[in-house]
Amino acid sequence: MRFADLLAHPGVVENFRPGSKFGMLAFHGGSLERATDQIASAVADRSGASLYTVRQPDDLRWHLPSSEVDPAASPALSAFLTHVDVAIAVHGYGRAGMFTTLMAGGSNRALAATVASTLRPSLSFADTTYEIVDDLDRIPIELRGLHPDNPVNRVRHRGVQLELPPRVRGLGPFWDNAEPETGFSPHTEGLITGLVEAVADWCETHHP
Image (cartoon, rainbow, N blue to C red; front, side, top):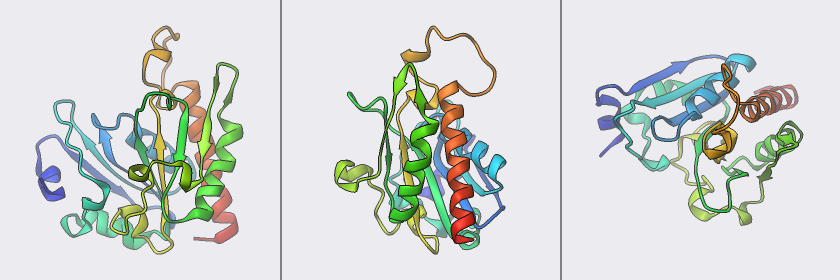
């Protein structure tokens, strides 16, 4: 399967919305890495960042490695990569013993440090202690997001691959007995708030 095949599949929705020179991506969204496209969209809405998402329908779960998400197959992705200078790609993962661990990979290590420093206070909750890892040596190799063909590393100043466990995305048994709420869970709101702050801090300092 190629990226072009995924985009052509019925029910798959691709979205590019130009904004600032800072970009938010989530190309494993929808049913695959759930809530990632919603989180990226919310950050872009609140920060003015550019946005690129791919959302899979409920009856589809096709996983393409990030290095195979090819801009040659997508005028929208190509336009996004040309438009932005730096980016954060939002991903989801789940591993035993790592349900409260967020990982900031990708080739722009200065941005990774900014993301980690803003997320730590915004993800401080009485019921959960999150760990935000930006030391590449502590991130599993397959989750580091360093491949040069990864879209987040194709932008001018490269970017951060942010791996999110289910809990911070508002998913999983932790939330089974939570009171029904509209919108995002409190933890996801904290995540979005921190990412919006990271975008603002980076843009103020680097003027992307």
